[in-house]
Amino acid sequence: MFDVIIAGCGPTGAMLAAELRLHDVRVLVLEQETEPASFVRIVGLHIRSIELMAMRGLLDRIAAHGRRRPAGGFFAAIDKPAPAGLDSAYAYLLGIPQPVIVHLLEAHAVELGAQVRRGCAVAGLEQDDDGVTVELAGGERLRSRYLVGCDGGRSTVRKLLGVGFPGEPARHETLMGEMAVGVPPEEIAAKVAEVRETHQRFWLRPFGAGVYSVVVPAAGVVDRAVPPTLEDFRRQLRTIAGTDFGVHSPRWLSRFGDATRLAERYRVGRVLLAGDAAHIHPPIGGQGLNLGVQDAFNLGWKLAAQVRGWAPAPLLDTYQAERHPVAEDVLDNTRAQTELLSAEPGPRAVRRLLTELMDFDEVNRRLIEKITGIGIRYDFGAGPDLLGRRLRDIDVDQGRLYGLLHRGRGLLLDRTGRLTAGGWSDRVDHLGDPTAALDVPCVLLRPDGHVAWIGDDQRDLDGHLARWFGEPA
Image 1 (cartoon, rainbow, N blue to C red):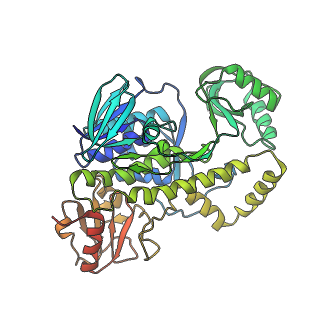
Image 2: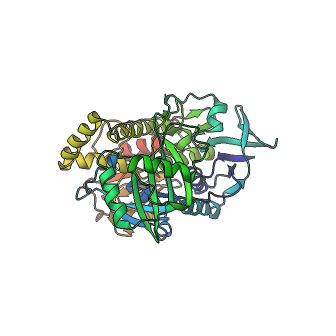
Image 3: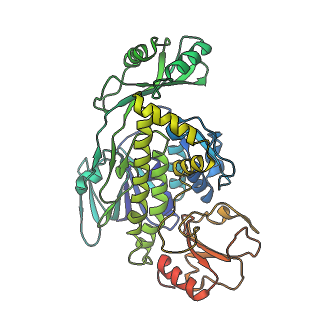
């Protein structure tokens, strides 16, 4: 009997497993693939995801395998630098190979005690008042108190639950891959600049040693399960650019569409959905992996509280209440970005107008905060603007704030020296620090770093501790 079974060991599933293990939850992760993906697709961790890695003490380990890039040019690939003074100590993009980030997050979960079984596909599930029975493709049956589907856009768990996945099917597809080229770099750069005047869904970007990332519109929409061939790339490159650039020796080839869908529900009883199982959208802006990892951070401590028996009754339902609107916003901004990539005259005119508007700091800042996740504010009720937002990694007398959040517990940051976590000290740490770089007397942080309370009154604090962390011990 496990506490939680997770279907899928991608970034979302691995991160969720680690978050649960911080609270001694017995976790089993089932991954249908027998081996990790072999192709090396570069993904980007945006500011909020980098912050979350810092909160758990993972950033140094991950950053050693990545490359920093400026935090700009994300929205519809409009080439504008990030505005000055972004509210983060980590105002950059971290590019990292996807197999590497998956491996590092899985290794982190395993180090904390999670079990991972590969070659295990979920084929059926039944739930009752006490738990969930999960049937594997080979007929084995496993029992768990909860099940979380982190098994991708074609999620078996979501389909078995019968949860609707409304949205729009793909209208356009794009080929993406990494391969060697056979023409000089200056010739490639000149041709790319010429073609991108009218085709924004086209680029060749150098990786070094003659290898390029190649993105080119596909000829039509086909089954994404059918991988493209090198000849498909050559044909489309000749159609769009008039040359195939002598591409050869591909490292990996894939295709992606612009289908946009959002699960109607994130929870049905003891079964929940996270990551691509709950939402899919075009990869423009690089938000997909980040959205899933942030789902895991929001869900992990809440599900652990439910398992451990101290969760307030509504706590687990706040997962959908908070994350569903965030996904809706991501889907909308990717829809907008996709339109701005069109070669049609109308969208091209809107793109030119938005490019001008992004010269205004307020516009550029709003779009960067939206893409990178640092503009999220959960609805915790009336209060100062900081309420419901994440708190940046500020200086405290013990070093940096995020260094105090490695264990996945709540934190009372108290500048008055008069408050206490009291009967919640088994779930909430307390730091009395009159020098903390805060503009308010005290804040209560949830394990995901969002500000749950602001004030200086103990009775008011106790009410909010009970709201988020249950009854005192």
